[in-house]
Length: 389
Image (cartoon, rainbow, N blue to C red; front, side, top):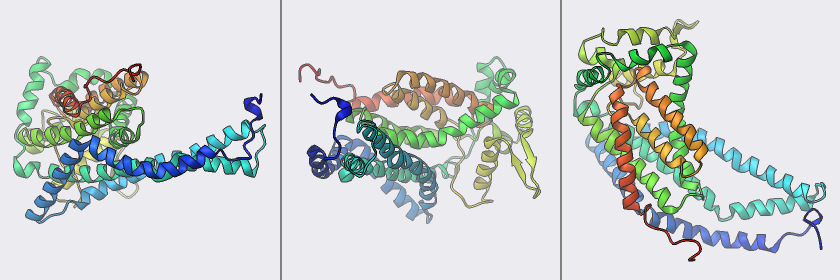
């Protein structure tokens, strides 16, 4: 009997070549499967894209700026993930084969490793899924930003005073940032919260892509998450946000004329600003730079994609979906995402982006949409037990 360490890798396993040939044929079935199993996702995405194109023609403006904005972000993330696929996986396979080839690295070992890698990636099924994920994310989010920029046009920002009053009633006359400021109002803590709050941006793309290509998730689970994403962005981030149009604490003075109510919070955040060597106002907080960027877009000072909206908080809504899907993959990482959700919720009002009620309303809405989409996509349909198969 030949032990595992005495295996000869000088000859290519015939099964690898067979896998390479059959993988090409499986690509076509993979395409059909993705369009068939996730038809609600594709139908809704197509309708949303067509509506955006029609609107851009009616209003004589374009949506491509938003598409390219998210295109740049997704390209950076794609390069990072591709580095793992193209560099890390071959190195691991080569190390494995060298180890079990009595530690000898030779041409046959390298060739066999290359063929196995080719079998894994043959037909482009993995890259097809990756391409579909990145392209759909770019198109959808570009269209979403296009519509978000129009919230102020469709409905003036008039709900800020109401939501500020709700928060005061909820916290016995105080504002949420005042209640939590003794715990969060420290330089290092605020910086951590600010960084985690920014991390939400690449995580949106990361989760979209990972769900698309993750073999651990069933087709129904993938469909549930992706379809929920579309519905939550449109329903929570556009329809509800347009009806309850509000700017958030950072723009409270501009939209209400009352610059005193949140002056304490804004004064604290301004301590992170500084003037650089060129006399330009800069900040150690990503949030402060974001505040100024969105206001410049809103006032027309710069022609870039972006939109203002506070209620409901899409940051908290998406973080809620991160938690729900992560628990299907890993309980430990799911626990960590709960902490990320908490940081996102606290950061939403500590960094002056939102009122506390924005997150308290968006999170339950996201959960409702999650279970509704799960029912529509068949994610909760009873599966046949493995032993029965």
